[in-house]
Image (cartoon, rainbow, N blue to C red; front, top):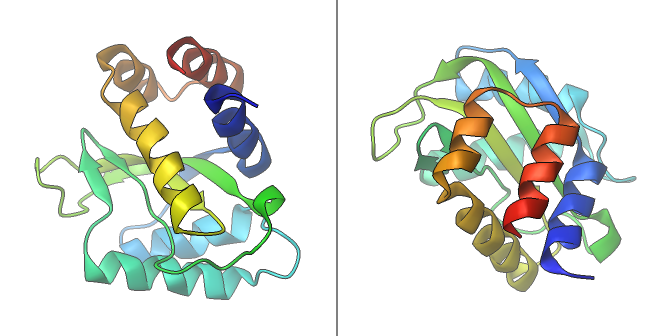
Length: 154
């Protein structure tokens, strides 16, 4: 499986979600975790708490209105349970980004270990460097448009 298929497969497992509401990090993660299709055995409350805890340590915003929330420690062990949840917020939220721009989209990473997490983060980081990919994200594309763009770059 190539890098594009790997990332696309994880996004297909996690899904693309729209209009996630909330005015605080906690509210957004609460609503988000109620909507996600999590792997069997992973409690939504535990996942939410781990995202909030990680965000308290340091922002996961990477600039340009994009954040990559993730648990600090793996909550799953099987590679097939890994997911990327693409989540467009109802309203942009201040995430203490270095560039000062409020976050409007999350790529929530659920990985099974450090090596996998870093590989995923590397591929996503490459995508986020592409001006046209960021422009597409600002339009809140549908799943087909998003995956076609990912295939183009990876």
